[in-house]
Amino acid sequence: MMKGGATMQFRAPLMIEHRLIEKMINIINKIINQAESTHIIDTRTIDVVVDFIKTYADKTHHGKEEDILFKDLSEKKMTDEDDKLMKELIEEHVFGRSIVRELVDSKNQYVTGDMTAEKVMLEKLKTLVNFYPAHIKKEDDIFFPASMKYLTNQEQEMMLNKFWDFDRMMIHSKYQSVVLELNKAFSKD
Image (cartoon, rainbow, N blue to C red; front, top):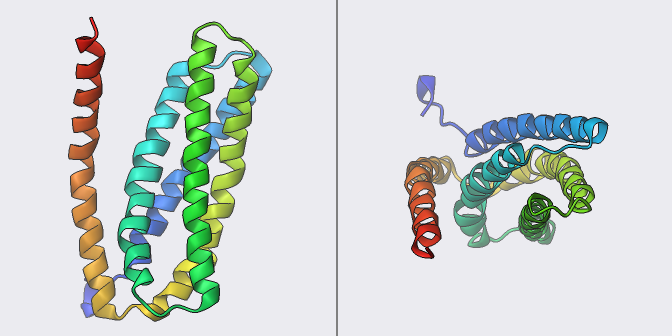
């Protein structure tokens, strides 16, 4: 709830998350420019970028969209146009995940001495820089406003509560995964 009893719209936290993702995209642009001028890519920075995109942009942000918003909307009678757009956004999430996987693969090749992987890493970073702003604009300017008509104030408030619960679980999920991965790595010895 907001002041005066007005309900916060469900899209508010999603749009706030978009602003942080946009800041990371600006940083990625700087990484690209630096790498193109120095011909050196700091793989630790790439690891941080990948972690941000995987954990924040995909699991946290896209997770709320797919597991809560899109799921709830799929139970509504949406126009064909809105339904088509929602499916397109889901496909774009899948595309983003594949680009991140390819970025990780190229970074791993680069770390093992394959200098041709530098070009692939830069291509994947550029793809992310081009992909996210258009995807975010489509959600902020078209899909979120269109989806408002399908949700009552009460449904939006319930959705916000689901968002907060989802966020509270993310840190536990993240670090359970970290411990599991480290355990696997050290069990091989």
